[in-house]
Image (cartoon, rainbow, N blue to C red; front, side):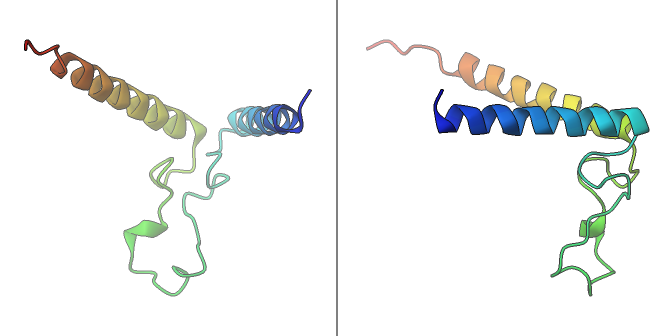
Length: 92
């Protein structure tokens, strides 16, 4: 088994374990249930909406994070279906 495959398997297993842990405790996996993200450049800009976690929209709950992820997947699928249907073969 190659090093790249081993690394990808380890990374996927780690991510799956993290998601299961967050699901059990009903906490957002991106902000660990805090509802906000603090980046060093944003720490002094407290008047910004960018502090809210984009994954859960600031709620800190896994249920909201999961709902938003599903919503994004549906919109991406809708966009890709729209693009493939608009690319009909042209006649020469």
